[in-house]
Length: 89
Image 1 (cartoon, one colour):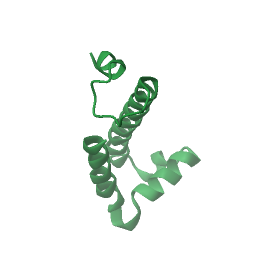
Image 2: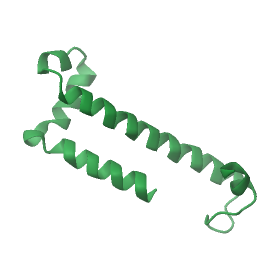
Image 3: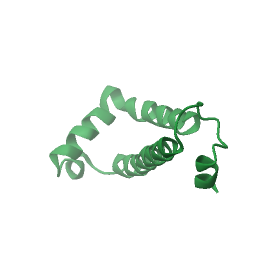
C-alpha cells in the first residue's frame, strides 16, 4: 500500500520529486528509525550491566562512556531525541 501510494504520487512529498527518490527516502528513514529502536533496546539492556561487562569491547565502552556521562543524564536525552525523531520524521 505504501509503495503504491509513493509511486502514484499520492503523498505529501514536494512536487517535482520523482517517485523513485521518495521510495529511496522512505526506506532510508525507515532504516534510521529501525536503528534508533534497536539502540533504545540495547541501551536499556546495557544500563543493567556492570561497568566491567560493558567494557569488553572498546567501541561499546566508548558508547557507554558517552551514554552514561553527566551522571547518566545523556540516556534520557537520547530517549527524548529518539522519540522526537521517530514521531516527526
